[in-house]
Image (cartoon, rainbow, N blue to C red):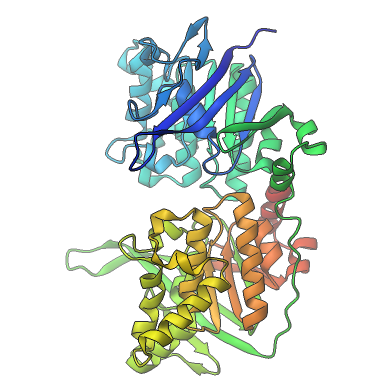
Length: 530
């Protein structure tokens, strides 16, 4: 069988900073795609997988990006590199789904308008026929009430619905090849499973070939028949999916497959309660009258009652919109709430400046995206020192430096890293800095809000291992918020399952995973292992 697409000796280079030389981010890569197959390309950030895919459609930032003279991407007997026919091929014969649909969709136009635009670029249809085609596509990709959704704007849809819209746009012109670049990374585990199922269904219906790009080998296993493993711009190994999983040849591939296997559940003992929540409620106003009075609101948290044990990890799990992040933010009074927060036996009075400051020192939070949560204009030392300046102004400069040097080493970084800025670090290193910033104040409780979801799978394992070590050494209490059931299982002693602002199930880790009572919990667990 002849391949539908041939990538031959593909190289992509960019200029080095402060140098006349260039650096290859894709280095002499060759592979084929066959008709009707799903090819998986897997690797960590910086492996070159997305650069390879974007080269197919000429979407790299040229002329800064350059290809070697030997580079070829053969489709329909022609080389696509620097090909003037690419605008006719792009979105027509070869389509692309991006990672983050909210960034890819235009917030100023309805989804109906945006899908129509994709069709009109390559087909001439009458207005009535065009609308009917768009509604058919929305129905085909699993959007409920497609006639109503036709007029919706991106912000009115959930993450899963937006990704379905992106898929509808991608298949609008019946492409031969669909490139899916990390299409499920930003989605909850149950929605992720639905999107994978949808892509497999559409691939069979439309007889497409799919290039599925991901940093998650376990996700690749669900969808791909053949896998390419990339690292540092090169292909490490490739072959049929089951061969790669059952008989990996390279250590790097083995590390990706077994990334979580080296982590063990730690059963932490407790000697009392750190927190007690009584009727914790958070309402978000969604409609106000002429006088500014709220006349309609939504319950993000609905009268939660919960006790959090000292020196243990409470896992908070649920899909987007379940209220888990709101829970963490309310706990440290980043958002207004009703109800009582009782810490170490007494209700916290956030109106008292002294009490508020003392509480914020003892309870720290680590956010999901380390790049956005770190000030890009500050060095690592300045970022970590900020908390000391507020809470320990009496310390001398030397005492502060000593504390900062100790904590930066504790999180696995070097003292020389203190003079660097956030952009000089990888995602995993930036999250280590965020953890160090929280630890410098010697808190008793850490709220970890999706601390690994923005990281590659091997880096996730490293951060989880680090958090386990720190908890044991410092006897900390953790609240670990995530939609990743694998991470929840590794980290948690007890688990609260949230849905629509309510805790619908609560119990010890093994009870929740082995004998879940709620259908919602069962679906979360099933989606994570299937």
